Length: 291
Length: 291
Image 1 (tube, chains in turn purple, orange):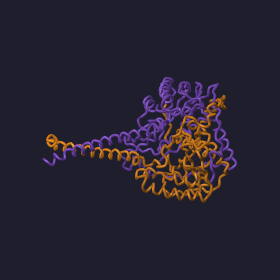
Image 2 (cartoon, rainbow over the protein chains, first blue to last red):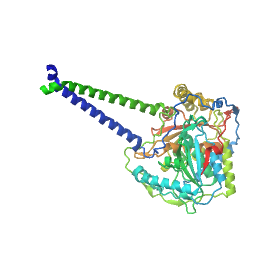
Image 3 (cartoon, chains in turn green, yellow):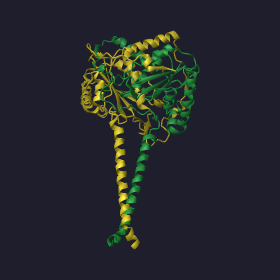
Image 4 (cartoon, helix red, strand yellow):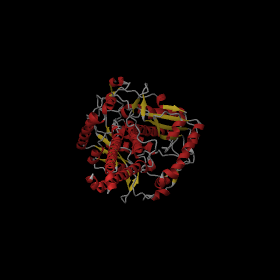
């Protein structure tokens, strides 16, 4: 007991030391946590909280899909239509000139447009390539005026918060030249809103999940083809990515949980007094390098 | 001292307890770390280590760009060409039918193709919309046979590792139906390889960085338009995303550090004996929902 008694101050010192270690550990953890939150959220303000590249890998993958018969798919000869060289140069030029007339238009008239045209432009988008031919897209065409108005309410509510709080001065400043803000009249006036959802995984008939490789890139490519089809038909649109509206719009449109909103395109004719910012495109030499 | 002596066993108990708390804290941290590593890497094997959605926000942003004069850009009337309704239906149908002939072709002939056609299809891609009109793309056109062969060596080397190790049985199995592997003859034979780089930030003349919002989505849309232009001209390609080859190809092609490889398209005529897998596309009712 004499030894213990002699050591008592040492015990107390050790206790103090251990308490200090515990407290420092805690503070360190909090710092790491804060830093993580910062890199995850604050530094990438335009990344939709719901979007990300969120391809999901099913946990129960066993290397075999149900559509195993596709492994034995036959390969067939392919010899497409061939244009002679002069015709090819002419066609490539006329396609460029047609697309170069395209502008993002934020003033869309309420004139009606034939549904057949909409069906065809979505058929065109559906010809896009996709990772492992998974075709991970859903095009929701909204023509019901009430649903369009509900979409407008959701988007304007979130966009006002985006402009005022989430986006930051820098981004709002970068958009000034386009004169955009959170009032989106075209969501009511355009005869059609096309909401493009990416499927972050597929669902097989047995309720098992199917991996959708590169789904965001694939669906973005399909949107590019959709834009070309809209222009070729002679309609206008504006490419929008409603920031942080995805979850609410998904619920409104009753889409399943494997679908996430990537883009929204209002489609129609331009208003009679539509204007566009007088922007120029980069010349070829600024976007192409030849090796 | 008598009191201390009496308390000695209590001190020892407290010391033991504090040591246990410290050890548990440590073990907990390690678990969190491991779990984080797992979600970050293991569960997303196809996400190129170099790719991600890596839009970079300059640290020294001050809310003002040099091209401030763009804020005062004028807005001009916009009244595009208008087709009558019947003509519009016809055009939308013919555009779909033209694109529906497109197939991903892995057998490309070494026949030469006019550079003028390549220039025009890249001009067409350059008409794409982009976040805040940043045009964050660089199209590198490779026609030099030696450089093409070096590209092939890099890609085949990495792709063999991808197929054997990185991709996993499941993914390799999903690609079986396309009969793809790591031998890419088209990288030598195609008269042109177009490598599409996304600029994760821009560089202003004062060497300051410029934010490129949504650059991956924007460049993917441009690739969609490029694919449509290639098809319209009458050439073929296959959409490839060379996994983990980005950094080596960027160095080979002497591209700056703000550019990351997104896609590679070999462009040319199909071989005379080219085949394609006999795949079907989803019908309209499987990709479109009308509300």
